[in-house]
Length: 311
Ligand code: UDP
Ligand code: MG
Image 1 (tube, helix red, strand yellow):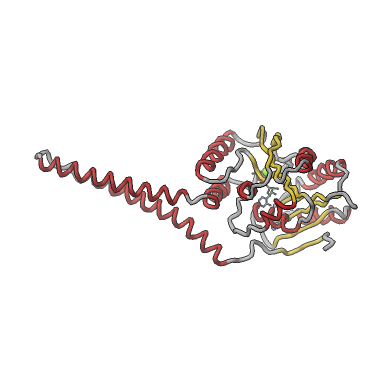
Image 2 (cartoon, helix red, strand yellow; image 1 turned 135 degrees about the vertical axis):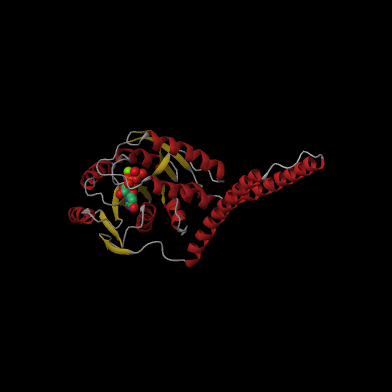
């Protein structure tokens, strides 16, 4: 019987400067574990030499696989493509820029051998991130947990190692807006954190500017909670009550001869309420747009290349 197999999924977008070093450190760690393994590099439509570098790694090592997406599909989809192709007894997901240290994988694997289904990396320190990113991440994870019904562990990214059944469970969820860390929390099973020190990027720049981060955050909320819809309804009722009180006050003032509060107050109220209505519409629209995308039912990604796989 062969040793259990570990698949390592590495999404890479324009990572030409990191990949060789990433592969060196990954192979060092994995070969030390004395198990059968494969490394699946997912080239997420890179414009630089990422694909070439993976090809060269592929030529020198029959445990390397290459998946090439037809264009840039984004980190979460790249991870999904890797997960779809991985058939190890356990699957690890790790960034290509060495911010997630490969040296943590053996400890994660140990937890898996003890019976954990989802072993997620918890960031004990974040060297490479700005104070702003740390503060927003802190606030976001807390807000998300208040809004959603699943317990999405704070301060975790996508660095994790999961069992076959956990990987299969998430593979079966084909939603388009993929907030993977939420999905892995949603499936349940036995979950455990392993703390690690998040390093600086080995080279290059982040592909997660504020705009992309906000979109991922919105996906987290939209995909795991309909509470914002309830909040809109609650706000609507509160405004109706406030409006009634307002009207009553004006009537009393008018009857007692003091007079009204003037048009300026009314104009301010109108602006306030119109803004609230538009914001509410935006939230409803967020759900509607996502529903539309699901109904279109397009595949999550297209593969342009698939190399190194024996199947
Ligand atoms: N990535 C990807 N597709 C993208 C953007 C990023 O596959 O469209 C990969 C990237 O190469 C890296 C990982 O996802 O391996 C995390 O991205 P990045 O380091 O830019 O994000 P950060 O660590 O700054 O949050
Ligand atoms: Mg990074």
